[in-house]
Image (cartoon, rainbow, N blue to C red):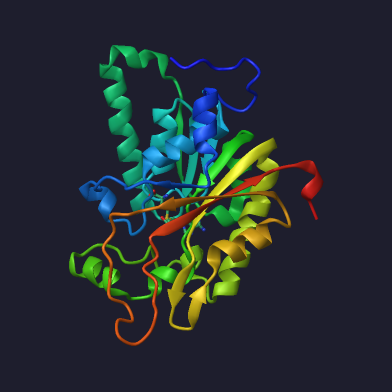
Length: 284
Ligand SMILES: C[S@@+](CC[C@H](N)C(=O)[O-])C[C@H]1O[C@@H](n2cnc3c(N)ncnc32)[C@H](O)[C@@H]1O
């Protein structure tokens, strides 16, 4: 076991593990998804999220995901022995999340070593636009870490080649028709504003000095290239301290011939894991 410094206030990593995590990019190729997880258009890999959780919290810490989807954040919280709370608007995805966690928890009962793992995971079907009332209704605690991948703007509405393939397989190409769904914001600017508003509402629920990690992408759409990660970071920096990004690269994705022979169109195979900190001085 690597040695952990007793002075480490943030996590339980060794010096070597700490250093490795501070590199500004990494390659992570998600394993193939299981059948039920595949229904959801944009799941992120739990093993990758577990690395973030291990850096930004200690065992027993509290992790929150306001856009839970199929529950990957809570699976990662379970794996790392942190408590997790997740909110998902669509019951069909919340149900997948609950089922995934039930399987893990039942495995734990069979595993004698698992008795040391006591962290609890809570999946709530709800609307993250209503943070204050959710906190009141469920008496939710203060958070050590918020980590999430929100809808990537109205991006899933772009019917590209990848979406066509999903449609042919009978899989979801967007989350819902629900107006509260951030993915259905009327415009890009409205989307960015609504997303920032949710994080402003979450901020008082985070412990002083706690972190928020938001996974986002820039993307191309008909009117032009959207600098979503950068636009969001700029707006968020008015409310949180922006601590920089870790760039998640994927090198096993299909390259599509977008724009071939007439214009440059990017195959976007990287995401920004944007890191923000709640600190007293930065509030405007
Ligand atoms: C990018 S996905 C999250 C995927 C998740 N990280 C996973 O691994 O499954 C974004 C999710 O946010 C949900 N969502 C959209 N608007 C929401 C809202 N207002 N409140 C809660 N969830 C919302 C969508 O239904 C979708 O499942």
